[in-house]
Length: 353
Ligand SMILES: NC(=O)c1ccc[n+]([C@@H]2O[C@H](COP(=O)([O-])OP(=O)(O)OC[C@H]3O[C@@H](n4cnc5c(N)ncnc54)[C@H](O)[C@@H]3O)[C@@H](O)[C@H]2O)c1
Image 1: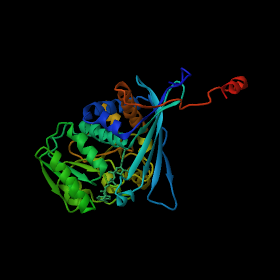
Image 2: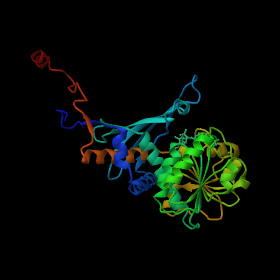
Image 3: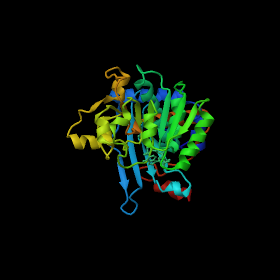
Image 4: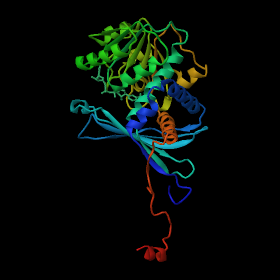
């Protein structure tokens, strides 16, 4: 413990602990994330724009800071600092890496540093599941679920959609890399509860064959531009944000997590805003859907575009920290904060030497 009673103890939570705390808890996290969306919609959060650090000599890489504050019964402030280096895949390591810092809302002191690539993937997948659960209401139960882009996020989204109790007959996958598509298909075969798994040779084939489509690519610009591929009016979880052309966006019902956030950084909806000069094509936020202010029609393509809110990382991170503390798994850094007197007492310093 710190000798100053008001200063929180600082601890580190490694990825293995984050994994242990969250593993198998999909339903609990889905409820947590849904509550965070409702708090956000009620104005009980602060979520300023993310800050993108980019590098002229490494144009595909970026590091993003997501500062945020969550109110309600479990208040917490903090920031996620997440890198995306797509060339890491060629190095045999994951694209994204991250830490999450939690700050005490009373003193402002940071009190934890958590490995956050897992928290980030979990909150992204849980957000897709919250949206899917709300947006399929009124539609026939999904029979064919397709994954376009088959990396880490696709794996987590599959795990979280599986917790919704859907019983699809078939899963489809497509990736620019046949190797990644094949290994994700193998993963699905092991976890799909007997459903068929089909690898599609093109995005068009996958889209036409799916009632629910999860976009989890690293495409920087739209590559799916023909609205006729969506003639069967699927639900689209557009997690990777930049795959769909403006024609597809304008032909769909569009639900977002936060309007001001998602209309940035050349997302597909941002491009649609630039091309149309307005935002009338946005139909509402996920909070609007959760509270019944907006209903997604079953006879239109519905696209959910989540920019990804720092408040979700903080909510999940605070939960992980609390559970790790309860089970004695925090790595406490004793006396992390030092030099806590505004004016040193020289007499004491001499005595201590
Ligand atoms: N909205 C959010 O809150 C949120 C949060 C986390 C990650 N993401 C996004 O999710 C995406 C996936 O992340 P990841 O960690 O799984 O990445 P990853 O690099 O592990 O996997 C991406 C996969 O997409 C494939 N791909 C790239 N372009 C493609 C295309 N045009 N068609 C088909 N496949 C293509 C790649 O071959 C790769 O297998 C990223 O764009 C990331 O920024 C969004």
